[in-house]
Amino acid sequence: MRICRHDMQDIDTQDVRSIAMTAGIVFDHAAVARGGRTIWRNGTFTISKGTVTAIVGTNGTGKTTMMQVELGLLPLAEGSVTVLGEPAGKANARIGYVPQSYTDDIDSNLTAEQSVLLGITGTRFGIHPITKAQRAKAHEALEFVGVADRASQRLSQLSGGQRQRVAIAQALACDPELLMLDEPLANLDLASQRSVVHVLARLNRELGMTIQVVAHDLNMLLPILTGAVYLLDGHPHYAAMDAVLDSTLLTHLYGTKVQVVTTPQGDMFVTPNAMDERDGVVPDTHDAAEVAEFHDHAHHHGTQSAQNAAGATNAANSNPNAKEARA
Image (tube, rainbow, N blue to C red; front, side):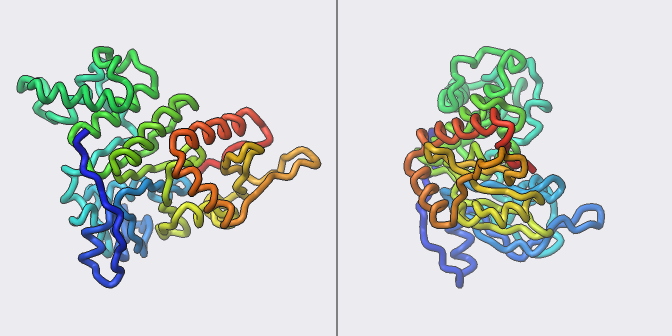
């Protein structure tokens, strides 16, 4: 697909304009309020281009609100947000967005191809004829996400995971530089989650695409994440994954004791504290150095690491004594 690759450059923190041009997303003392209530404030951080970032936090902390602010759909009460070098909302033509409600909002009688064409033609769908180039672009996007063979099937005939990949294909049809997804793994089985994560891994690894994902559960995404925005105590913070995968931080974030656990095979996942562990069973937890080493290994072995993380999550789901931490 014809998507711009992004060079990872060092950011001069003394030059605001330089930051705006080399970073994907910049928050500068940003605050947002709705209905007279402050959702979060004092948001100051920079997310580099070419990264994969999760937005995490408990329900009601403002994860989806953050994406709406970045898209310019909600005004700021204070501060500023810059996306792809422009004020929030000004660069939306260069952003692909997959809302959480995609599968509910779109007409399930549309075919997969028609759905992706909507990402190209917008409101003109059904009024103007579809060109050969537009149809080719739609098939290119469907091919990339692995559902080209379902192009003529109605969305109602597809599985949840296939519909989610069609949604991603629709967002990719206009060659975005930044892909934003709101809870893309929600209500999907493990195999479908793995397929979606594999698509995101390819977009980042092969095309250098900047990706931002709202997520409740980090486990399936761990092998591809470079950092996370976490909404804590009314403030958004950004950190690299080796800092986020910290038991004390995650415990404070989710309001329940959380540990970072490994399997004997070396796979890592996040789990609540072993309050209900069988007597004599001690989880294998990690300090920051071990987490950093794991993350570096996972980042350089994208596809295999995603498969391993899926296996670890599957094991955690099937073990009543090792359930995942969820917001």
